[in-house]
Length: 182
Length: 177
Ligand SMILES: Nc1nc2c(ncn2[C@@H]2O[C@H](COP(=O)(O)OP(=O)(O)O)[C@@H](O)[C@H]2O)c(=O)[nH]1
Ligand SMILES: [Mg+2]
Image (cartoon, rainbow over all chains, first blue to last red; front, side):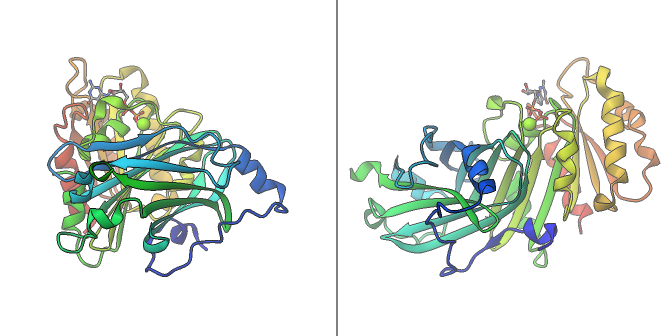
């Protein structure tokens, strides 16, 4: 794959499988090194409706054990207004000690375990000892096409897979709860 | 007009638009990107890597890459050139001490094969500061008039107040058509 192809973001059609999430303990030392030097600094979600300031609705900066603990999950309690936003802004800040060449992120939206949306981004190069931010701004489906918040509450999760090439560095899972329905 | 408006104006054949923002550290790249996205620009801290903003709309993709400008990071800039549709070079108009260094880095970028022919927009930023050099002086200092192999434009602006940023974006849209 050329760097050009590698830098192209594709919205993957629903049904495209994400890489296997199991982490193989027999894997070579390079990916282990990457893992050891990788961390999530923060994740956030915001309302990015045009014409007004971006309003942060959820932010979490406690991700220390996400690499070592595969069952690590977070819960985000979000006001239902976020589901009315015309554009949703998702932000991930991560650090890497190691240089990477084929860094990519898969982000999936799961409803009751079923994939409803899937984004995939090829970053390519990651500078050694860097801290990087990905802001992903996505247009909402629009009125009438949205799944009602009552259905989403407790059944929706955002899964983010961090990969170097085909190998998984780590997985961050966030369960979504809706504040007003708690 | 912000980044969201830009993506709405893309013509149907543009599937993806890749904009690369470079410039010395502290020139205001991240502030400009935040200002253009209606995000609070007061909270920026120095970028120790990249900040990528990707916007998806009607299956178009707008990707704006803001790469840190510290001297130690500059050797890695080259990893992000490929596929660039437009280059934004941000200048701190009040940083007279580093104007020469700023011009040198730009001239190196313009020699890069992977950026050949790519339109370049120079933001003469921080015009709100009293000691800011006028855009014309910056154009002279960076020898922009010598650029023959691509479209270029210099736009005075303030990433802090937002003034001038939209004009710059409008030029970019025009230049990539
Ligand atoms: N007065 C003024 N300060 C600015 C302007 N743009 C950025 N700054 C400040 O310059 C500093 C560096 O900005 P930043 O966006 O981090 O620069 P970067 O390193 O190029 O990303 C910050 O303290 C900003 O608040 C501007 O237009 N006017
Ligand atoms: Mg910056």
